[in-house]
Amino acid sequence: MTLKHTTMEADIDRILISRQQISQRLDEMAREIAAVYPLKGEGLVVVPILAGALIFVADLIRRLPMRTQIGLLLVSSYSGTSGSEPRILFAPGSQIRGRDVLIVDDILDSGRTLQAVKVDLCRHEPASLRSCVLLRKPGKAPPEAGADFVGFDIEDVFVVGYGLDFNSYYRNWPDIAVLRPELYR
Ligand code: XMP
Image (cartoon, rainbow, N blue to C red; front, side, top):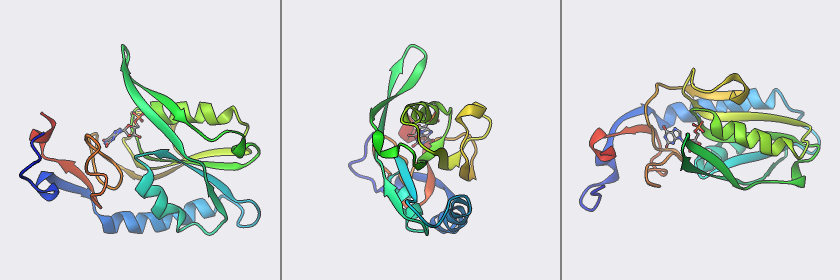
């Protein structure tokens, strides 16, 4: 990547989902989530998958009306012989036992990450375990790796912005965007 002499804006090919569309959809998603859980009592443990879900979770939880705690979870993907396998580096443990848990991720692609996280969190016997993703590439994840709440279905392109990165850059771009193809080469 030759980034020295260009701006971030110059790297963006097109905006797929604007910041206004995201904000509007988050209002709706918060209502969908609030309709499922009780408003009273201990509330939710929200588990964002870092780092991609950082910005999404910050905006989402501020729209939720019930008590909410956060249990951070860190996943790394490494390349094995059968492709990229997620590895859970850090996750909530006994904190989630008997609690309503909502996993939050930026994008559901092959479903490997979400499935691995579900299996790991299930070991601690939460009262309920649901998942919420901002983006989904339809038809790619198996049913068991599906999400309960989905922001947008998108075409099968690599996207950045609003927490999603390329080489750890572009997480701070406020829209969901596609980069100029020459940057991937
Ligand atoms: P899987 O395939 O496990 O992917 O469902 C989930 C994780 O992979 C990353 N990912 C992407 N990151 N643009 C990105 O910036 C993309 O188009 C994309 N697709 C997958 C992401 O970290 C996600 O949590």
